[in-house]
Amino acid sequence: MKVDKSLPLEYGTEQNRLNILGFWVFIGAEIALFGTLFASYFTLINRTGNGPAGAEIFEIAPVMIETILLLTSSFTIGLAIHAMRMGKVKATITFFIITLLLGLGFLGIEIYDFIVFIHEGATLQTSGFTAILFLILGTHGAHVLVGIFWGIFIISQLFKHGLTPRTNNKAFIFSLYWHFLDVVWIFIFSFIFMKGML
Amino acid sequence: MKELFPRKHVYGFISSLLLSIIALSLYYFDLTFQLSMSILLITAFFQAAIQLIVFMHAGETEDKKSIYITIYYGVFIALVTIFGTLLALIWGYY
Image (cartoon, rainbow over all chains, first blue to last red; front, top):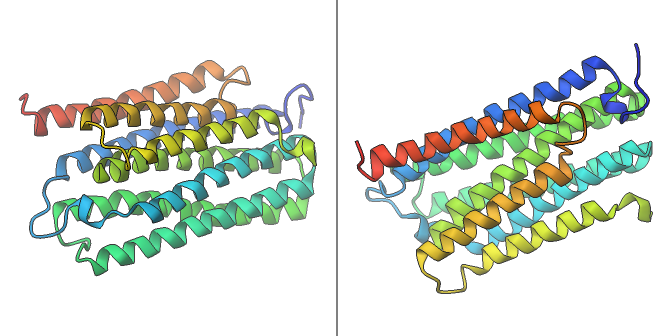
């Protein structure tokens, strides 16, 4: 395996470079996916039937906490990659664990939020509006959940193999995914929650 | 310890927190809907740019061009989908 030392370890081989480029293409497709969900949301936003509208069920406190948790986790995974590039395996793993814990906290609050919605009479079947609301939040939440499992496997590989071109490449691609989830959340936060509460 | 917290990342984090606070504060101000939405659009796209450039290192290798073309193309598809849907189904231009 030819490793190019002039680049960060995760780009070192041709295969690794292509893996990263390929993941960017996947992110492009994910942007389109969430675009369709937002299009459906804006279409169905007033189809509330007998159920509540957004302004009646959205609350600022949980949304604020979710935003801070996810923003901070995006920061810590950035620090993990920075530590990884300095060859500090312990710091990398620590930042990875903090990131996943913050992600878990985010999911916990999101689930709590879902339970509150359901208690207020907004279920998946209540109206077109609540259906698309749960679909778009759930799609994002499912991505976070997958990310948490993915992250656990990366941590175990870092423990086992340390920082190699291969593990660095996997960790870097995971960081791209995690930052992307934060970007999606910013749009959900701005154009679903903030817009709904204005 | 200090070298684990590079300036670029710390500033990126602080600016995304600030942008979030600006967006959140709209809840407490009684601005017009149009003005609030414009501010939200600006804060959201700035935050996305911070993630992309500061944290995701989008421009650091020879693949920079391909990466940006992919992302612009994805954003283009998303915007056409969203505004095309709004035009046809909500705003009534069909």
